Length: 256
Ligand code: SF4
Ligand code: SF4
Ligand code: FES
Image 1: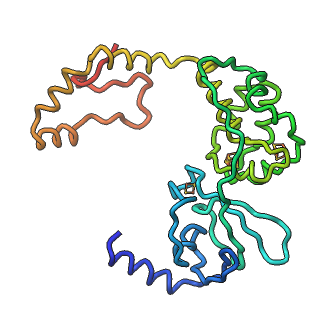
Image 2: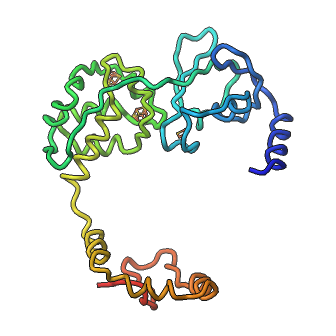
Image 3: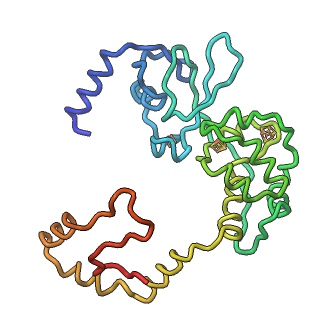
């Protein structure tokens, strides 16, 4: 961002309504519209760890906070949670959790596989704290329960939106690493249960056979202006096109 844009952004933030927040016990007044992550930066913190995508995808910014006179520990992703007055904030540090090592090719897609790699799964007491902690609104306890029952497809599907933030694990009295169990279920499902995607296999075969070489050579031989024209005038698939829609010009396509 340019210096002018940054200055304008800060000026806008300075005219906004402010709310008090506490970062590791120290009070800051920050604009009410900011996420926790932006509020930390506004307060002068430089985020080196615990910050990645800034878009709710990477799960790096798990944060816990509390309010005065409330015993509840609240959790959220710092990049997605907007500040509230009198939040006492701290980001969760990295903490070790069981992460099994395996060769997915050699595993059977069964509950016994999960049990062998993550035996602590049977310590789950069904408290539901993990589900209540999840910023992605995943029914974490239910996917753990499916994994215990050997329902790999169910555990894979239910855990699909997991961003690996670790907030569930941080609260679990049974010391489960739910996110690692979820990713194992998804890997088992993807490698051993889901039907093969024939069209992808065909495309890989075509890449290996160098079927695209001729088209690539033609493109590489074009001048920038020709390439721009080709791009701007390309046929675009219409909305609600037929399932097997194809462009008239198939020069760069391999259609079988
Ligand atoms: S927090 Fe732990 S013990 Fe409680 S339901 Fe979730 S996995 Fe089970
Ligand atoms: S399942 Fe656990 S690690 Fe995954 S997004 Fe939810 S709280 Fe985070
Ligand atoms: S920074 Fe990636 S989820 Fe918040």
